[in-house]
Length: 504
Image 1 (cartoon, rainbow, N blue to C red):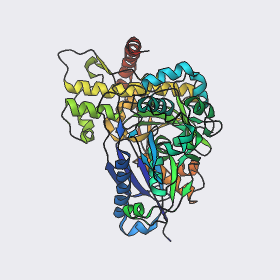
Image 2 (cartoon, rainbow, N blue to C red):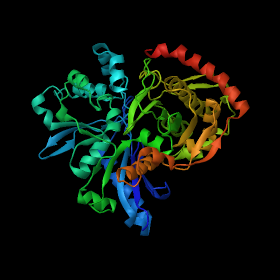
Image 3 (tube, rainbow, N blue to C red):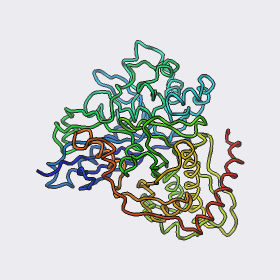
Image 4 (cartoon, helix red, strand yellow):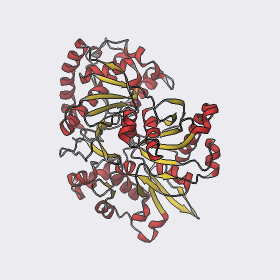
């Protein structure tokens, strides 16, 4: 009998990606369907939740169709999604409907509410309980912002609490598919409203925010399986309504699994729309300086790490607005980087167009260029922006090394790290060897591997992670590494000199 297949579905920042894998991690098909992020004004970043759901169903359908004769081997779907999204639902008749757009991780409109919460709550106490600093990205500030903006007492009327729900985009998809409200521990841990020690919603924060338990989803393990698909949705995906769906985990957690990064001491470096450095641990690891986060990865594992807001999203913005690149223009990033040598002719670029997360968590910070002269071209600025992204990730890398210890290995996730030029730049900036795993679309692949665990094909996530081999290595180039070590010191001085101008 032929081995079963699981489709990993990743609901990412820019699109839905579906990958069909066998238990050995071999990819048989993949598909991607994009959707838009609406940024009508500075600080906004939201998406149409129904458009995201429709794109997700389309991605699965295209992935299934590409399987051809192998489609009968599909044993289930397993889900990954970006962390930190928030949608307010209201009851309309027997069903709930979206009352807001999906407010994404990049949305900074809750900045003022964050500052207010910092005066009302002990920020370190909140961080130690939840693993999440107070920041506009997380739910406490977003829920307070919704309360202040809608001004309809959404969290202050317990009698009406059963008529609203606060959900992430994955929870919204699952509600559309099954009519139930459930959330995995990983996505819940990325809300900033989840207690890592009790593995449940944090009662102290809920009381402070006037959020009733009935307004939040039931928290379930990442390996929880749902059955009884909505028939219309099943038809849209080209699958049987009896196909089981694994609720899965957060995209960063599954990216670490998908690159084989589950062993303690292994770091994963990712640059997609945002960027991150993460590791796996068997106990929560927190930093009393609050430079890093700590989320739930899957049963028995946590995910200490740090993230930046400005990865490919910043390079795509610059390429579109200043180089005239069309959608997908970063596919040629190597050619763009090669036009200018390392060091960008002395330019430094602080890449904070969408504010900042780790390690300083300053939502007020904005992009700054230093050192421009008449010899510079738009390509110098582009390379300086790419170098600035790498430098910012190095600050996260150093903070995580203090919290979790120096890494024994550094693996890279896909996205911009699929580019040889960008990957070499990151290697030279970090000054460490990078391991390149066999998988692509790592979060979707990680979701599929976790699906095999949930469905009983593989024993646990650690074994699933070991199925991912390393196929290549990248080593630092001595000259570039020395240069970047010097420039990085200038970069830190430049940041520290300018941060006080932006609230820090």
